[in-house]
Length: 191
Image (cartoon, rainbow, N blue to C red; front, top):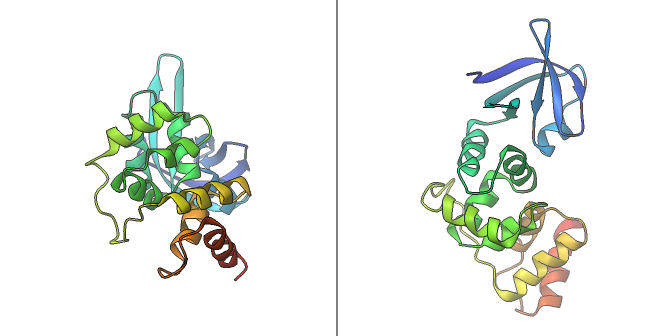
């Protein structure tokens, strides 16, 4: 098994990197966040998972061991393959996944392209009891108004993680109506 890859980035592709290792270019599928931070010629170190199937030999790379662990956890959910697991990690970071599981919010997963309501529920059920409490961050349970704010922010092009961060920044004593909460969340982005 290939546990990690260290080398120079030879190419940044739509869904992966080509990493030069000992004269060989390895194609490593990575999250959107990793692709956004590296450029051709940069040195990179990634924790990896090798997926071997009858018709597939693919390497998936992650910045942290925790991301790799969540990738492997996601693979255990019924109906989730490597591409979908990587899409979940590209849309939601580890803490957002942890918060969604601890708050039992399957709808957060259905915001990932390719994840329907049934698959989102399967992911939630599979991850329950496996993600831990994390870094001590408060679990944010979304009320109806905040769920609508999250929908509005993602419709405006913000990622689920950015939207959740903006919602968390809304003062606790803010009025519960959706319009006020949306305005306050948008103010977070203008800072």
